[in-house]
Length: 391
Image (cartoon, rainbow, N blue to C red; front, side, top):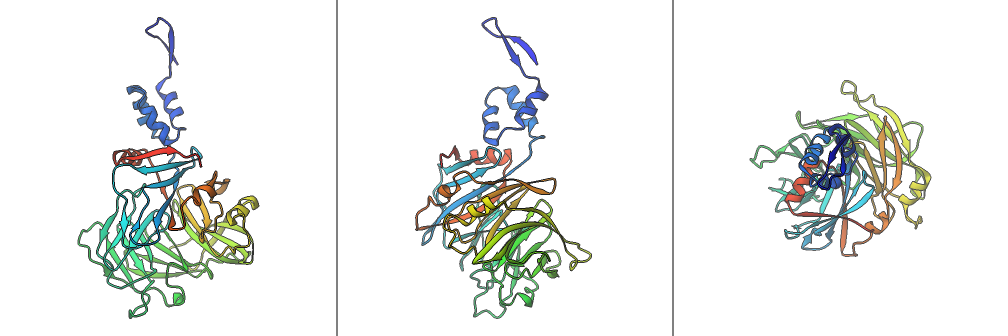
């Protein structure tokens, strides 16, 4: 600490750089932006504090019209776990994004919209930029979609009149030629479930993982070899699961499973699934936590007569977000991963009000992204406004 004379002859306290950097590293991103405006020394301190900053994934809730034109709402909601607050995002300059079909989310970070005319997708943190490419050659209704590195993969969900119901196509999103390449078809054991309705998808930096929500039948796709590998079923022996969902937290494959049955779900467990490249049929399951009963009850919603048929898992970095995939009005449940275990379980503040604020003519799309200071600055340059919500 250093004392300096101010203009009135009194003393003011100056915080040493290292101490200030340490303090700033605990602030939410929006507060860091405000700190930049204080003075040049503070702006420098913010810059150096970013080395200590732990990026925490935000949860995003978007609304889109259910009927043509499929317009994305100009206002979205984001939950920042560091400030533990909902933030209203509003694009104040550009027109609403219109799609010729409904938009969907996949493996937490990808938004996409598919039509016979084009394929649109967005992978940036705030989904401000949409890329448009030629549609895949095979006509599809409900495919699974993933981005692994520079490879955009689309599989299954094929219309009945197509010859190959398991067709897989791949597009190199960095090559610029816009040509879809046919790959090895999906495995035959997915015959009854080769669509996004029945499958859960997760991606690592190298592969796409696919599991059947009901049975746990699992396989992986390698975009380098354009081929599939059968894995051991995701069925931990000590539990009877009737539905599961997968995601990646860092380099760890995470599985969430509902215990019991649809009429009487009794709980939700999560595991770290350890996959060996040398022996893919030799998976290991390590329990990382059980959802507390109070959170589980809120996940189901106040009207627990609705069956909990399946869940959606958004896992990025050290955060896990879980909600009812049928969107029956329950809360979103969040937890942090610390030391390999789930902790700091919470239902998001007033999540039910935020979740249900859209009217009947709109659908909800949920995504999750790591948001860094550079992403925030880019959002400001794109005229995205931020205001802490009162919901």
